[in-house]
Image 1 (cartoon, rainbow, N blue to C red):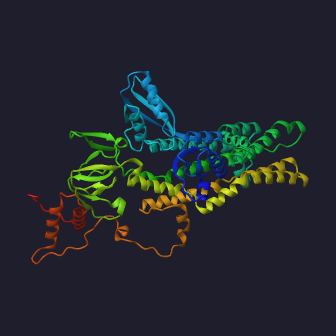
Image 2 (image 1 turned 135 degrees about the horizontal axis):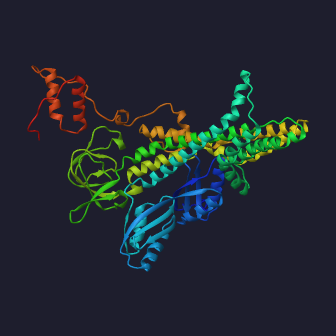
Length: 568
């Protein structure tokens, strides 16, 4: 629809939301999810990133039906991650109030369920996508009640996602260690054989060791492969499940029936067990890479305080969660604290350290009427700030969004990868079938034919195909963000290798972010050490960056500050 509007010469009004999706393992999964979401009514565009496990969905004509998108993702065999928000609600008196609040919350785009408890005066909301607490609070207030967020942290949602990933990493590491412990006895004979040491592990022992690896630790591949098969497509998990099952099944057949026919049994339990172990190890390493590349975002988010000190109309102050601060609220900021919101200084004067935003090391003087940025540091004055932007509209949130957008964007090379991955798995299955048939036609035994077909399936697993590019983008943008460089999008990063000249618009981008004192020239008759001691004495009680530079100079020269009194 959006394309049709553009073709007619008009610009459609779009709305973008972001979902976290679990269960994707390769580029084929990405393609399936994108096709499923694109089929939802009102979706104008979709981009799914395997490394971040996120989908950016663009709606047109104001039809932001996130619940329908979540249902489409579920129908495709994947799981959209929901966020849970708890609110404290006052003013409810009866069951009809509960119904009214629940209906108001369910009208918010992205909310899938809302449960209100009259006795506890709480509401528990489950939503898909990014639904800020203040939007839910406004919905409750529009119904005639008062609400406040029960979460005390501005980063609760991100913390929940981090906790989920950490729990998954712990579980995956445990599975890797168990799989390695069970597979090692199967591999030992193969490792010792070149040394002339023959060790034979009985077939039934091999079966007992390989079975838990195949059907317990490897169950994830069967589940994901079955979902892919039901969707009439293929993915990496399907290749792993078919390949290892063939090796395991051949070995089981040899164990059960070879002795009956007087044949020597050849077991390949170690092949299936080791393949699953190595892929589990790869999954764990992949998850660790994802968590590490998210550190840049967490570092940026850490610049924002969790709490704000809101000043009421009567002059009273109260500590509230940052999510509860609204545009127009007056916020008190003490010396040395980070400013929690974007706003305008309405009372007091100070110097503000804005190096997190501009790179300039020296604090900027601020007086009444000047704008201040959330995340910057109030150096030396008690100030009152009128809030002008909260939540996703603050400068810091936009910077975070820019980094996340760059990490989640697809580079031109990734679009080519997506096209290849769409036909990769079916082609591999066909090649494996041809390999099996070719060896049988050539006169080789069934055992040799199956082993070669299994080799094609296992070696062709397209793990790196879909993961390499997005992980490289995440790593590159993450390192750049830690260095203070924000990259607009993935295409800019991909073409950066062609840069020959870089022009810097100000010296602040090239400094260490703090001033240093290089030299001191004493007046005639004044010793250099006395100059250093006096200068340090004057600056000892100040937190100004220039004062800290003087104190660092005195410390490097090994001079103790002189005593000073009557400082004003």
